[in-house]
Figure 1 (cartoon, rainbow, N blue to C red):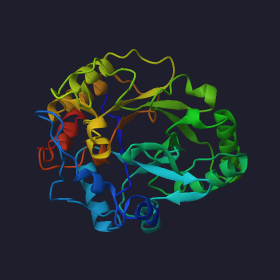
Figure 2 (cartoon, one colour):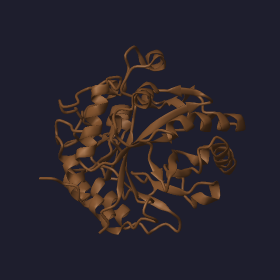
Figure 3 (spheres, rainbow, N blue to C red):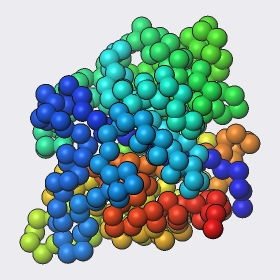
Length: 351
């Protein structure tokens, strides 16, 4: 059983107000605005998820909170954060926390970036076709983007694979010409003295297939895998219900998923319930619990064989996706049980 895996958790920065969210959703809007409004949709449905007091309803502009997050992650066997990065033709959103992490050198905790390259829409209030910020693409923007990223790649905390900075793209299929973009990035990185890049496509939604055909080095399994959820469950008697699947069944389907014929890093999730964002139109994976997460991660640890000493990554969705009921951070129901389950499954538990 390999003990040299690196466990990286996706990290959402939308826990501080920004002018755009004030305009679109109301003054002071953050992810917590949705979280606190969530209500149960069927018997036994646990909502809302309330953070434990150690972090509380935090504001990511507070450097003390960012230090506490890193300490909790480090103490429980999580090796780095994958910060979501929002780039729209040079315009960045939700950038303040990461800017401060980069400028201050704190917390002293490994990180990399994942470009969340979707247009922003009014999905949360059911008006998904209303575009708030459109994602556009172009050669000049690809060059500008990689030059901006170079400043992050140069940070000594930045996660590398064989000495190459790790960069993820959430929806590679949305790029008009993925191979052209990755070629531009690689060429510009060499010219700028950044060296070689290690690029991963995220297998989100229906994105699948050999990543090398698109110019990427590997893929990242992103849970939940919407193509392998198992049968839908009926949980409500009033005819109005969210889409509900079984967390244990989904974990078992993931465990038995055939190895890909290309480099694909494994992924796990502590749970999923986007009721805070979608109300009765939510998708819920019922039956998630720390012990079940522990079994899922333990099976990944037992079965995954790194492709090389540095190609040893496992991805957790997510550290703090509270609006999707998908968080390792402590809450009032479970406390630190998910973090402790992670530490035990990863072989990092300290009595």
